[in-house]
Length: 130
Image (tube, rainbow, N blue to C red; front, top):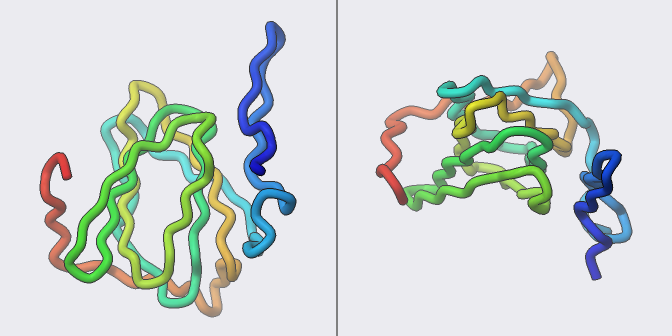
């Protein structure tokens, strides 16, 4: 059973990002924040070895995904469970809120300047609204 993921009080809130008790098959190798400004996007790109594991902590982000010729979209908001983006899945992150979208990424393996594992994506024409 997943531990309580998002709890509010009059003083603020707690938003766990990752807990080994909830996800024993995945171990992050690095943790960093990606910030996307309103009306902007990051990507698309994909990885051949690295799995991304994203949680939104502020704002709202739309993930646009392409695997082979299949497309998918999802909105991430604070309090949503983390989302995994697998290898060979192209991803673009768009900020769809009036404030910056802040996502915590917990990839494995970690990014390295010696082996960045970032593959550009060509022919990026996501169908609207799908």
